[in-house]
Length: 203
Ligand code: MG
Image 1 (spheres, helix red, strand yellow):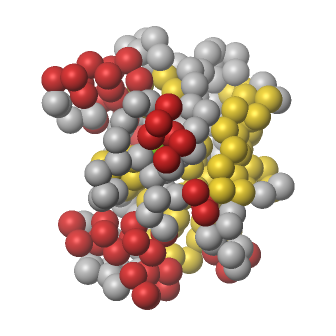
Image 2 (image 1 turned 135 degrees about the horizontal axis):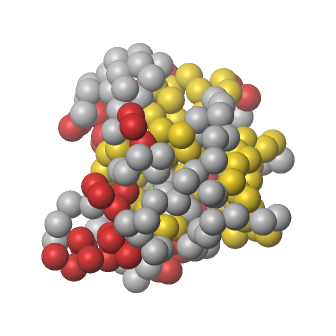
């Protein structure tokens, strides 16, 4: 399986990092070694002094698809969950400055904690879905999918032009504003609407 992630999909987050949208989704990927499941603790690596949390809605692909028509894109998704796109912001800043790829800042081991997945049919209005992240009990990020620059259908269609999507692949769909540095001892809890999907610690 592969993990595809979308950058710069929420205008308020683009602004907080002083980035610019350019009319197309920003796409990158993570290997399967980035996955962290079952609310296992995240062990802070020593190669970064500034790892940020980015809470994101994650789609799980249910069948193989290539050049997917946006009108049928949601038929390729069976389940939805919540994930964190951990980002070594200090390394990413250095890489961006040099115009280099982001992989070591974005795709390192355990950089993609994911929740259990639930049937997407549980959420009939995917264009109005609240999700949030609490750190040590305080809300740090709160978003709604209506704030996305590119909706799920557009993302699936766009990504499938470049990458054949296969059953089990995951798409991280971008983060809203409020990203910030994690520290050892932090307790992260992630929600879609009122249901808790993520609950783990930084060690
Ligand atoms: Mg992200």
